[in-house]
Image (cartoon, rainbow, N blue to C red):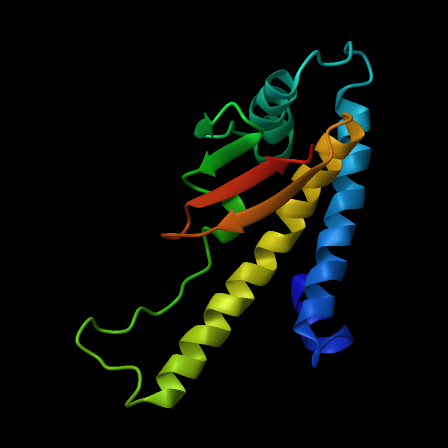
Length: 160
């Protein structure tokens, strides 16, 4: 799906592809959270809903729980998955440490495109998380960070 939106539908406009992929994820997350919470009482606070996402919701989607949850208790949560299933087969060729990228623009361009392609794959799960929390009555913004593959961190900021 990601490659279709990036290479065919919105090949010249990656920002539109990213928005569309995230919107599809939002709809999927919204519908899945409706299905998974149909027999549950409403959550009393944000932390309880985030814990549901980390344990039950993530287990339904990826057959494992989120590995780590951090919060500042002010509406910001970091959900960390150390082996995010959708990134386990993605690889970016790291450049040698002593290579100066300014001397090899083709290497820098190739690395940039690989990183952009990897980031495009994260818009969908960000949308899923945002849609699930929205359905639970928690408006938020979700972004993703990949420091070392296949580990992935999702930053959830609750809107006031």
